[in-house]
Image (cartoon, rainbow, N blue to C red; front, side, top):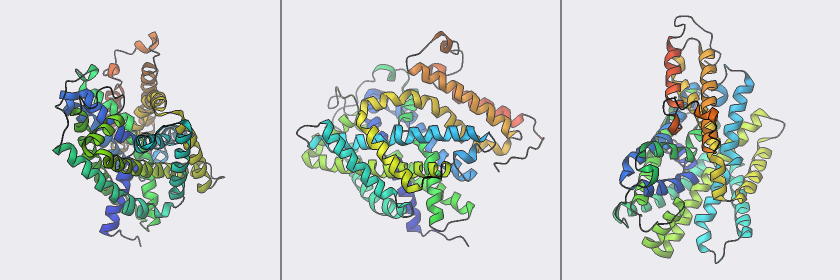
Length: 439
């Protein structure tokens, strides 16, 4: 008989989920977006919340709905397709970009302000220690909920609430004017900025990891797993919304204080020093350190679980060690370089990942699931590639041929195309049953 979680364990599961999502990108992007959006903060923030909260929320629930992650969602396609999509997402969200970024942000915001001189050696030493600690925690996946949900996250939440309250009570500047593209397209720019958190991709990974945590807690019934995962998703979404709103407001009210800053971490640091002085830097170091550490633990665990399943010759522990070593290595590339490299890759992968999430909700109303899913993935992969080439600076005549597509100029052509394919798929050969292996 499947066990049940106590209310405390359920809350801890939600806290753990929130902590996994609240990492580097969640902290460094909203303040800068808020400052650039200025008087257009509200539409910009709403666009950001759609991709940084809404999509991860429905992504987690989609995992609960279908009973698995990417491999389950792509079960009707040739196995290599699902593996290729999954590997691309796990590599990007894991050792290539998102996980190394946690160590970099923890270093630049939590350590550099206390150093008389930051060097490549100090960065290397910190990232080695940071990912060693993350590895030690990730090597105990059965205790993740207890370590992260019951110990690390409550401390993180208290610190975040202090910061959020201060931002609302004690803004430093008047809300400034919108700048650059945020003047006319605040919502769409906020929407695309939410990509950079990588949380929608993370939802497909963390959903599988959380189901594994539930199994280790004795929750075997799939309906019970789906229910607990949905509750955890709602708790995480609520926490993320509070954090993003406060950080957007901090950025919007730092037009003078944050002038010249090239990333949100610099704006956040300037605010904390202005309001709290040196003790504030210690508080900020704890907030950023805990947020980045918990996310790194979750990402290393999720990636190691996946690669252990795909290539079982190496154990979970060996894969976790490999992931930690790779992350520590990539982390020494530099934050600005890492972000610039990751942008085109995200524009390529996001449309496919989002299409899978929306397909998970629509598939019960589609009779020819294999055909519709094939068309959906092929289409979103193609428009994603076009967007990636465009943002990378390769706006060739070939790419420009597709300017006729709705929202193509905003890199959102996948949205209407996904909607059209899923709606058409609902009518395609309706009434003709197809044996769906994914069900």
